[in-house]
Length: 401
Image (cartoon, one colour):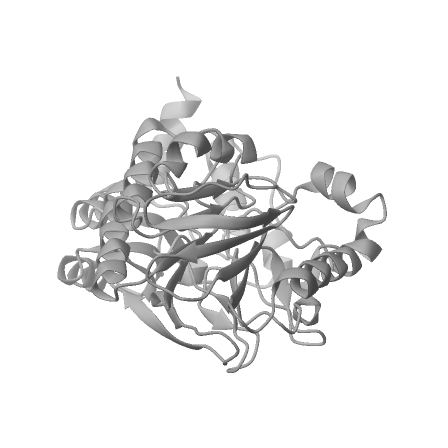
């Protein structure tokens, strides 16, 4: 059988003042096309479906339409769990209606999904944190251990007050108990979770810039050796770069977000994971690149002319722009830069120091008139750079207002 694993859609997310919805529409179309072209039998969406607890109407509409199309009108099951950006109750709310379309929405850890069937598949076994499905096109069952994100309150509810000490132990024991009970070699055995997980002793993986952190110190770090031996593939969400922290034989995969959502992700290629699995055998998987969305770019320039030329030649980007120069940008220069490109997220002027010594910086005559005093103060705070005429005109306008 074939499985598509995706995560971290963050529908409704913005980049500073810029909406990303149009790009997200294109990314969802691309994922649907891949699912159809690859003729996948099952879809796993590993959390952070929305970017916040109260998504807008357009983001919610895109989410439901995407899931319905991924389900191919109920012919293949879609299983979506909540992440740390999602409201579990919001994810759970449409579940009765979603089931009619072959969509299984799981908001809370330890959720027990009531068995149900459609024309094309049936849930034949269910327990807290576990479901087993039979699909019409396969002659073996699919078992899925599911663990949506749990916040501080729910962690204490499920794992006790000493969650720092207990979470790995409890998850390991819970997963092992379910795997021992249900996951023999007669079916395909999967785990999907929205957690901060890493190999024990490995270098700490960085959470995305601007992402709500899960890992506080090492309190919420889950080790991959907690995964039961029976599990053939683990579908993770939370980290936005594609990576396998497991082994080639037993992958533990962050599938990545569908778009670059912060400048810490600049230059990353985004993917979905396509898995081929059969009972009792190691899985194989490939990462399918996604091409939708604007590139995020960090650039440093030393002249306004070079800046404008690059911006004109690279229109379909979002850019964090640093401009190093001998003097501060004038209003006309700023206007020229912004008029040349509609995706400038940050413009960071950086004035080069002229080598003024620390002693010179602090020698300011406080008894002089306000205008020369301001000039000296400005010079002391900006590496010896003189205030230009435009800035002094603005200062005088404020002073005389």
